[in-house]
Length: 487
Image (cartoon, rainbow, N blue to C red; front, top):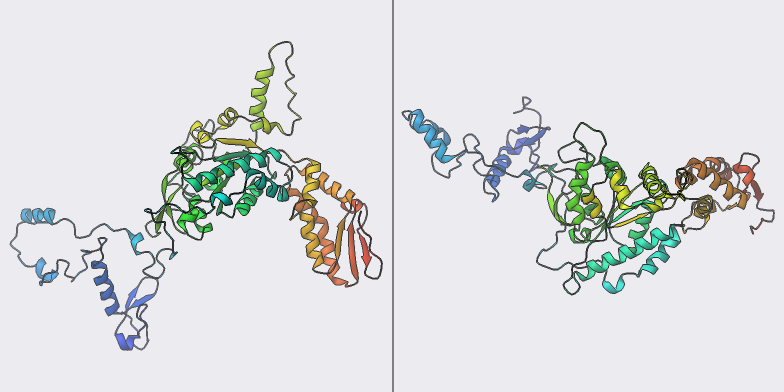
């Protein structure tokens, strides 16, 4: 009760003032509740079907009889201790077990309050892509070509795998023959376009996509994200529509980080244990998923998601996998008079293209995990020519983005051939793939984009190779001077 009788307080539930409802009862987190609302809440919870009854509030009649609890307690003081113990064993405890998740959304601040559209298990799944609307593999590859430079073999493999997977989803079975999932494992150096390929693929097919990072996953019960958190992201991407999420794509990046740790004396909670936990996820099972949270707890509502129609794509750079491949290749070619030199493969940038399942297993991925990722392929390392094409050819190429930005200021931005080659050369030296392109361009474009808005007479800017190499300045052409057209 409040000590300040002059202070007017309001009930958190019915919003009546203390003048109307009487003295307020103070709850944790500075919440005030009137006596009527508290009593109504207690009565409602006792009548709920999921076992909140018999909570045992003092002075409350839990057995629906006319006598009060106080009278029951002092009714017969002559009862022996032995009879009292026997009576307690027959009646059982007065507090029953409850699932606090059942109360999510009933009270302010409890649970996520997210509305989930659940699937009717009695009805067949409605495919989000009709069989006749699934684009053929060559059509999928043509779309990928518009956004991704190179990686011809990888794009072909992904197109076929995705085409087969969504045919499987759309038909369910073919002549009672159950088709296996086409889960993929892609291997490639950093910056070669693994994530971008998957994003483009999901955009072409217009299906929900969740991108998760394997580095944060740990075995259940340890600090980190639970394995089911990847499905929580997919459910969120599907606008909390369970049926739509069950036909989406999950991309798990940095999958090499959950390889088995070598020479470890402690429990491998973020390595082999995570691989073991992901087996049922990849193969297809009904998984209890927390809604709006990365971990399960009593205050978060749960929903069941069937993963049998979810396409899982795992990707990773797998550093030092080249050494495993070299070791295998040297064993195969180091016997006899025509044996290859041991350093034959040292200068091969695309050694990953010769990867086999046995190499990945030796790297630290368990056989059961690899068996659930039947489609294995590698991506090429980006050459200078590929980096130069990435700058100009794709629909949303980096140079086109900067040209669009300056076009809004009514200024034409052009790059000559020497500038493009210089940018590609610098990016190749950084050895981080296409990610280096943006950093390099941003470095020399910052002054141009700062100075151009100062002068409305600037009509055209030409970036030269000398400017990229810090040997000169860009060409600035004013509006009253004829513009230079690029060949």
